[in-house]
Length: 131
Image (cartoon, rainbow, N blue to C red; front, side, top):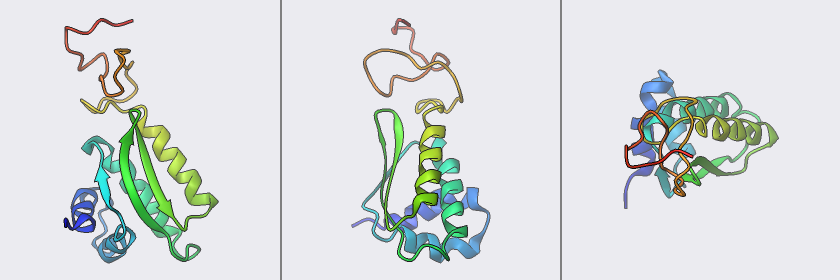
């Protein structure tokens, strides 16, 4: 089985800039069975993890269960969170909806091709027709 918490730490470490968080992040993701998102979203997830780190005294047993892309957006599933963390998760999920999963551009018009990950107008294949 893969060491997901180690993989997550390596992806988030450049954005967290706080090596003292390594053990906490690995513990947070120790029950995570999937972390499969575009690398363009790692900085947003790192910000979310930092918020959770700062909130850790109020959280007793928060764990990240799964982080994935669904319907073109981030889904960040946890257990043991409070309403504050739920709000932070909602904000992160909303921010990721504005980032193209193909090229990482922010705020560009997404293509309407019937596929969730069709991309945006900047990275569009010329075979797509924009509607």
